[in-house]
Image 1 (cartoon, one colour):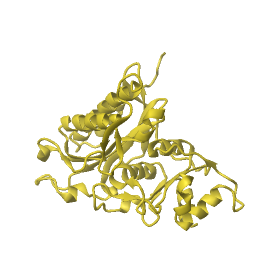
Image 2: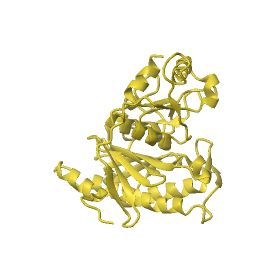
Image 3: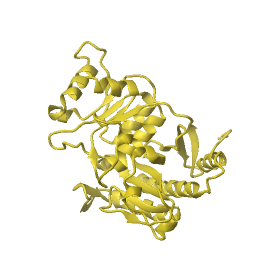
Image 4: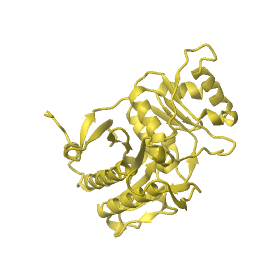
Length: 327
């Protein structure tokens, strides 16, 4: 099949780097290693049903959640590849209790926070899963990494995005100048630009939330869900909930909508992790014209206090998030 005007991820990054002559190539190097890790994990995901890598790893992570075998594989793969780039000083992972300091961390200019395999509870049922990441620049290269580097506000992100392993594998990311999506061409094993300058549609058509927990949601969330269901006279919206942040968000980025994970009686601070899930997805959402909020503050304005801090999350079309907050 002839492919005209094909732009690979590496070509795109090189072109972007040329716009900033002061950049020395460390970020590009880091990107290359992240995409290489994603290809390795993609191969594992695609072959999971044939290899003995489905099911529980018979271990729990710091959140007390059962780790799946692919959780462990993805975490190890991304850490190994990111460290080997030589551009990273420290890695923050949802699957690791503490900060992982890279070899020769003083030489690394960047900090990476990641959820190596979001939605892992969906692995065994062959639903979409993915990797979420964000990249920060160290605040002072003349000293060792400290808490000021680790707990940076989301507004300081240099780049962020996600890889979704679905019917096709896509890498969606931003460096602060909009959002672009790249689809993995399996025939050449290259990510190719398929979705340029992605914008979240203004269609208020989809709401995504686990209504099984609605009994203990905050009252304003209950009010908004009633609106979405058409119970207050408005046109009803479609309920779509996969149970994987990355899958629900990606659909809403393409089609328009809102994803909600409120606080509940069992999880008063919400369940999603601020550093690994909420901040990078909020960054992508804002770059695509959307909004992300906790019900009290914009997600990107939060100064993290703990590695595995949790917050409620409302993310999607700006108009839908604002309507929710005003309910």
